[in-house]
Amino acid sequence: MRKVKDLTGPGVTDEFGIGGTDLGVMAQAPDGRIVAVFGDTFERAGVGGPGWRSPVVLFGDPATATSGLGWTGSLGPGSYAGQALPYEHNSVIRGRRVSTVIPTDVITVGDVMYLHVMVCQGIGNVHWTEVHTSRDNGETWQHTGASWPGDLHGGLFQMLTWGLGDDGFVYAFTTGFRRDQGLLLHRVPADRLAEPAAWEGWGFRDGRWAWGNPPTIALTGAYGELCLRPVGGRWLLSLFNAGDYRIDVFNLDVPTANLYEAPRGTAVHGASWHGEDHERGHVAQLYGGYVVPGSTPRDLHLAVSQWNTARNWPYKVMQFAGSAPAA
Image 1 (cartoon, rainbow, N blue to C red):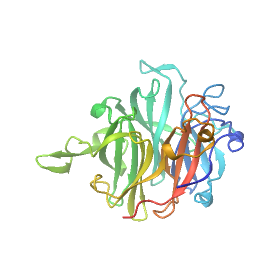
Image 2: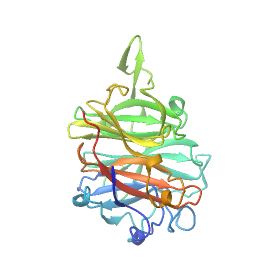
Image 3: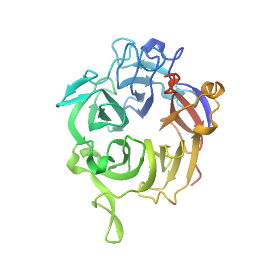
């Protein structure tokens, strides 16, 4: 893959009060705009300092999606990208100390957008996950009331990605936030997405795989951020492969495909990074890998995060372009 541009950082997102941020899960809103949701965000370049908020929403011009995504606005006030959900960092919520709320994915179903988030006390410690909706193209968000405990399925229902099939189901891969476990697969009727009881797992029992069984590990390994999208008649699954320190992409015919046999390629590898950090002799720590709307299997664009945890800069999101592995 080749780097297209920086999507956040000094000289890019200053007008929105964004110096440092990460993630950037994306979906196309009902009105056609690209809605990108970022994680812990700060006014200065890096981690820490004033203006801590998460999640944060920017709006992108779909005409620029595959040439270098351009921002057209933010979830206010004014041009300043405010926090999309109403809570205070390091406050007590539902009897638990919450440091931050981190987005894992966003999806559009009809005229409604759904945002899945992890409610956390520090990185890797998830109290619970929940779903919020927007009926105004990502301008405002409301809690649906749907939530799942952080230890559900052994902690493998924390980091989530989802995609809408043409069969009326939303399919979702999940894993833990510690980046040391494999993947589970689930599905839910699209019109019942915010009903936890309507979700069912893909599991192996009595010699076969079937829906409704307790979910079984669909792929072993150590994974982090995930992104599942139906693209060009296929299903692309991008994931941060923490075990091998790279971002991999799968090209699937259906979400239930055998992930051990499906076409798989490496999009970006941490060990071969040649960015500003690499040139200074620092490890360029990468993660994320979210599909940019408008991508095709042959012209695949990903939002990739970089955070040097030793110096707290770079802490930004970049756009990379390449292609998915051939089917």
